[in-house]
Length: 128
Image 1 (cartoon, rainbow, N blue to C red):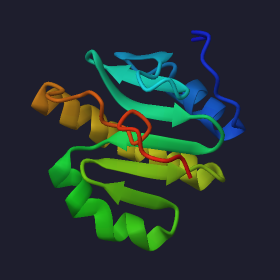
Image 2: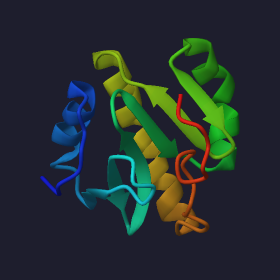
Image 3: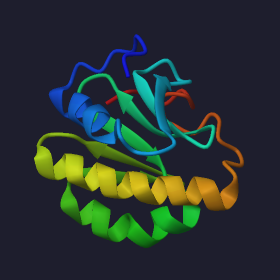
Image 4: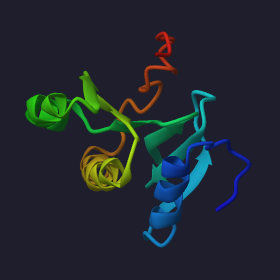
């Protein structure tokens, strides 16, 4: 699993450990240059950025449908077809794993159309 990517957060490391046995999921350096990417079917579906932040590619419909619920948590932010999640505890890790399952389904259904650049770092947005 060690692909030479920096995931300094213990919660990001926990995500990598828990997804290790998932069929079809691999880890590589994120295309944006900011940490590790979880890859499914050739699509980077999640980025674990340095520190305690993750970003997932959910697609517009899923992100719009879940947006109000996620925004109410105060731990997640929806931006178009992506969701950014602050990892500060085990419940955040579980939320990320649930969203990752949805991101993988979206990737399988949509064929990862328009996969790059999708994360805010890749789009050149300021890092909070």
